[in-house]
Length: 253
Ligand code: ADP
Ligand code: MG
Image 1 (cartoon, helix red, strand yellow):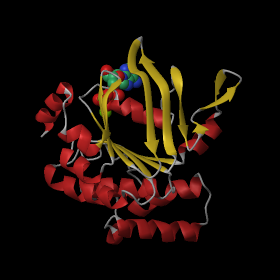
Image 2: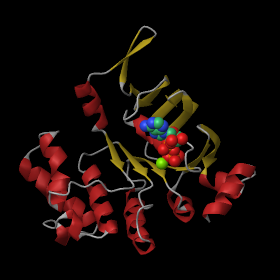
Image 3: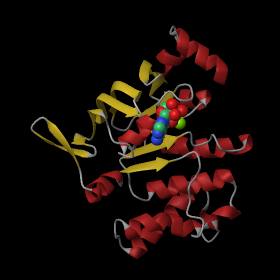
């Protein structure tokens, strides 16, 4: 399998502070990568760079070989037009800690909105697919509900269905269960687990180590804007000879 996502010396700064420090990383197509690391280490920023929600201060990111956010001319990079960025972004689904559903649209409308409006797909096909996705996340009977009628776990499952409705090549999850009451975490992790290894490349920031062990192919451990450990899940978590990784694990387990 080829590389779905390639980071080459990616640097990101905020007001003079280096938040991502020359990150290089290869994520194989179809794999599941879990990102661990303490708060403030740059995990969300790294995810946000993948769909160009953040501009880079150095380096490049490619998805499926295609440069993200920029076009290259000679040695110089020029940012893409907003239309091209939006088209590129639609190949990447993102699920946030706060589910961010549209409050004034029903569950079904939340899912059909982007395929209809952005991709201008056929209405009947979009509806059929949205209902299949609701079935997949276990919410077939809730299509006419408003987001606020659902529990946090149900809302997050709708958010996942909404992202999948765009047929993304890559799914990014930024602490998808951190805002949930503990008893609702399992149902969301279950949905994510079912998606794993279905062809979509997945990058997941989470503190759920048990989940990481079950679904991840690879784990990346970040600290201070750098990757301080990475590799197959077992190697990173079990043979955590890296003292910083071990200390971190002892705080979240
Ligand atoms: P994590 O997700 O690992 O907790 P983040 O990527 O959110 O870390 O943040 C890494 C660092 O970058 C933090 O110190 C944070 O304050 C800073 N940061 C993130 N986004 C911004 C922003 N838009 N402006 C200024 N600083 C930011
Ligand atoms: Mg974060």
